Image (cartoon, rainbow, N blue to C red; front, side):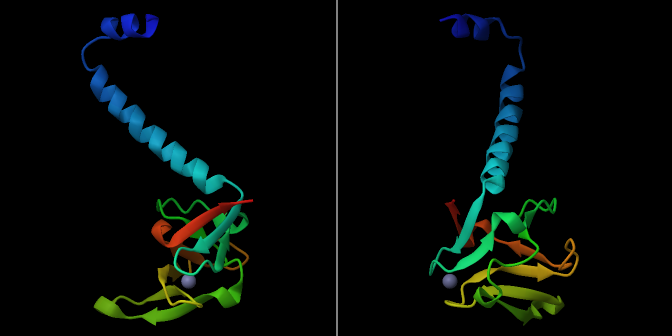
Length: 125
Ligand SMILES: [Zn+2]
């Protein structure tokens, strides 16, 4: 009741502010999902690929890890398409494309696994 009364009193332009709030909230929700402790599995074959312990904020908006959960589960392949030199990361069990690995990550590995969130399935511990 009182909420509705308050809405009526809000000045013109509130809609725009609401939209901005929504974006911020979505971002926060996503960040919350990314900061939860757990395991990231391959959506195709369930292989254990990454852990939240190894995740860091790269500022790219992509889930970024400095090492795989199990080295043998993640395979890196040279990807020279479009004359861009980068290293593709695939699931070692089912060959699903996961993302790319770059050499500008944090220590101790110096690697940045930039992974497509759509290829990961989060499992809370
Ligand atoms: Zn897989």
